Length: 321
Figure (cartoon, rainbow, N blue to C red):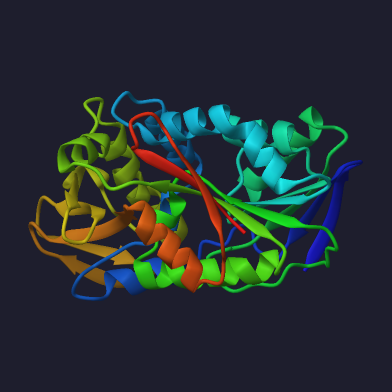
C-alpha cells in the first residue's frame, strides 16, 4: 500500500501498485468459455466514462434524473440521518452533481472516494479537494467489488454511498456478498445510502438501454476498444452489434455484443473463435422491488431502512442503518 500526499487536504492510497486494476487475464477468461462474457468494469476507460456521462443526459435514460430529484427533495432528512462529523465513503467516485449535493448537505469530516481507475480517481479527487478546501479527502484506488481492507482505522460514524443503481450490475448472489462486505467496512454503527432502479414495464426499460441517438450502443461497443488496448487484441467493433433487452423473468436488463460474422481474434496471443450471431455478454442490470432490496439488505446485516422515490416511482433511494 502506497500513501501519497497530493495536497493539504488530499491523501491518495494505492492498494493496487498498478496503473489500473484492469487485469487483462480477466478479459481472456470470459472469452474462452462457451457463453462468452466481458466484465462490465472494462466499459470504463476514458472514452467509456465520457460516453456514460452522455448516457445520463439522454431523454430515455431516466435513472440519473430521478436520483437527483430524490436527493434534491430529501437532502435535509438524509443529512439528519447521517449526523454530524461522519465519514462519507463513496463506492465508485465521481465529481458528479450527486456527490457534490451530498457533500454540501452532510458536511462530513472525511470524504473517502473508492474507485478502480487510478487516473480517474486522481482527477476527480483533485477537483473536489479544490472545491471543498476544508474537507479532508482520503482517496483509495481499489477494486471495491473484491475483498479488501481499509488502509487506516476510523473512530467516526461511517456512511457508505453507492448511487446510480450500480448494485444492479451484480447478480443476486454477488449483490448479497458485496453488501455483506460493505457492512463490515461500515461497522455496527454505520449506514448505507443505496440507489436502486425499480422494476417497471419492459417498454420503458428497453427504451432506456436502446436510445435513439445510439449512445448506449457506442458505449457497449467501446468495451472492445478497451480490451484491444489492454490485451493487444484485434477486435473490430464495427463487426459487432449492440443488443439490450429486459428479461421480466430474471428482473434484469441484459446487454450483449452480437458478432455479425464468423471471426478469429487474437487476445493475449490466444486465438478466440467467434461464430456469426454469437453473443458476448457485457452487462447485467438487475431491477428490484422495494421489498426485494430491503430483504437483501437485511440478509447482509443491515437493519431498519428509510426510503424515498421519485414522482413516477421509477427509482428508489434507501438508507440502511
